[in-house]
Amino acid sequence: MRSSASRLSLWLLLTPFVLWIVLLVLLPHLQMLRVSFQVRESWDTLTWGLQQYQNFFTESYYWRTFVRTGVMSLFTTFLTLIIAFPIAWYIARLARGRSKGLLFMACLIPFWASELVRTYGWMILLRESGLFSSWLQALGWVDGPVEMLYNDVAVIIGLVYNGLLFMVVPLVTTLDGMDENLVEAGYDLGGGHGTVLREIVVPWAMPGIVSGCIVVFMLTLGSYLTPVLMGGKDSAWFTQQIFTQFITRFNWEQGAALGVLLLVLSSVMVWLGLKVTGQSLRKVMG
Amino acid sequence: MIRSVPRSKLFDGLYLAYLIAFFIYLALPLTVTAVFAFNDAPFPSLPWKGFTLDWYFADGTGGRTGLFHDDGLLRALWVSAQIAFWVTLVSLALGCVNAVLFERLNFRGKEFLYLLMLLPLVIPGVILGVSILVFYSGMANDVSAAWGIELDIFRPGMTLVVMGQVTFITTLSTLVIAARLRKFDPQLEEAALNLGATPLVAWFTVTLPWLLPSIFGAAAMAFLMSFENFNTTVMLTGSDTPLTVALFNRLREGSTPVLNAVALLLMVGSAFLALLAMGRSSR
Image (cartoon, rainbow over all chains, first blue to last red; front, side, top):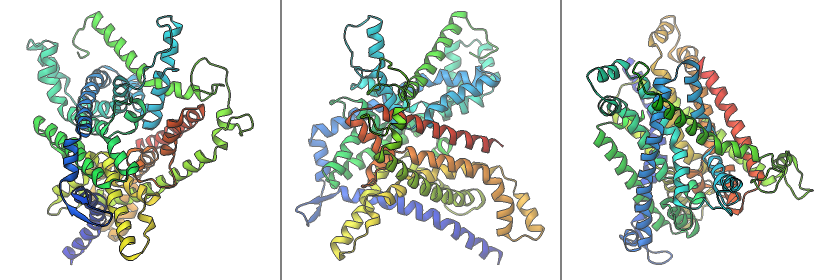
């Protein structure tokens, strides 16, 4: 009796979970994979083939953008980590009492605004008629308006900005739990700043570093808004090509193939990140 | 590098300068967006032409249409609110069930299912949108071609947007609620059962009240995430464009201070909701 009741409750609780995962995650992704191998011969005949993937490798425009997006995302992730680490260290270890809470809050606040609002703010600052340009002219450093938007540097500034929270929060969380005696012991044993950082602090913070890097990399790789609005004509992002195939050209087969490739890239990078650092998805995400 | 270890004055000075620079970098884009919502000029740029509320209240007579008279933006705001409402409702219900499933029950394959549950967090948002578009909209096309039945709810539009957002917001709400459930003392529930309550009554009178702060926090988070989402939404939206997509389209045409007005309104709204949720969950 008892066990049949618990069996029943297990099935009752399992059903919504299974429906969600199967209907919204697994089936759609399998279908996307299937469509990516379909080749449209005419408007109503389909065969199977690798046509779309061949297009990807033969059209240099596709794979160049793919590589570019991957490399720039890696760079953005690295930069975000470098920028966020001292801030997280200060909040977790050096700030005291009220100022600790306030500084942490200050890091959270910009992320209550949406990505669109944040990107828009950067556009107002960086564009030709923007604030930085006006300030530089007022200071007499430049003669005419300067365009700082629509290039790779602008895109990276925007992407790093978008990623910061997802790096600062896990870093603060892991650094907060570190025993200060460990660091002191490191210095007592004759370690310099560099050694202590490398041998004690970084290994301790590794779960936070990995979780931050995974999320930032994934968000950057999959972002559409910031590269489209802040990037120039030459700085295409891979998501832009997916969007074009689906929405503009209505070429779902090609779009699906590009989507699968992006998913493979992000999965491989996440997997590599976990493997290399010896972390598990459960530990860094859940 | 910790308080008890002596540092040089120069290092301290540089560190402080870095901190200040960082927080300026953090605050600058949002501050200028907010400030230019009140600039009496047709473009959000310098010079400052004086304070105005036109970008909120102008009724179109002076060549300016403020946010509260801009039907397109108001309609998009309403679409976003509806989507966020449904996403919050569905992802909370799923989140509660998932939290109980993973925190209270033991079954074979639990670890594997937990990893599946985390999956949407490591799939790029655009891909979540694309896969749902391919599956459901494709199905609607096939059904229409084969039997002539129109499954309009599976065409790009509000239902698909809700489904796309629920996909990953459910994971987040599950994590928030499960974290709180983990701290719950099961003896409290057993006490209720010993006092004669049925499991259902015990759940509603003991466990659920304990979870309420986290449910409230998860609700605020789900609502915000849904309202602000762009990457998944843009792939699934039909003729009813939600606010982020509508703003994006406007931005591509060129920016006006009306966009700043909307942006400021969004910031204030989200800040209010976030503070409310934090106040509730810290109790």
